[in-house]
Image 1 (cartoon, helix red, strand yellow):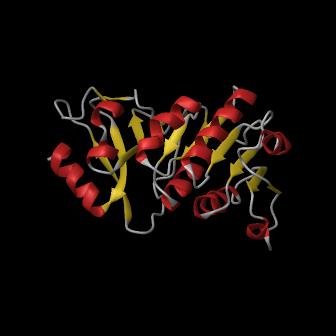
Image 2 (cartoon, one colour):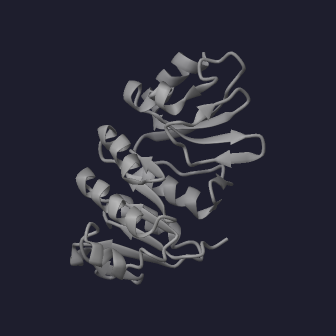
Length: 225
């Protein structure tokens, strides 16, 4: 189902390109914004040369009528500023932001992002693919998400009595402790991919965890057994 409004992608670096690769496969109208004119050579999609933190540029990209905005800028200060401006101009906008540093995640959420991903190219691919299949916050995602650069995704069932049961994402703090991230939760017939710091893991859930092979192994050793 196509979103009611168009999509905006701020930043056409590695993450932005990953997002566009996925969005180009669907029936979506999207606008890409980047301050470097050269990155748009030989592209055939709608784009705008400008700074993603500039209010006038965001207005020109149609932020007030957009449904989803991907903030894939390389500097977290700019990510925070762009998120804040976009949220103020469109309270209904779904903002999916990239965090270049784990330490910036909380600040980006406070600026108004709905979801913050701290992985690079893989985050761009996964966030775009998940959003492309979403209707609101409850989504249906494909089972086979391609991963690169040594990044893996595994699914694990949460048993009753597990160390994960009834704990929030914030309390687990997997990104800080291990480096991996919970990117999805299957609860019955529903798949939830908007994972917030307050999200609680329940017995019976199936969680999708993404990280390096070493991080996934450490996660299983600590929490799965």
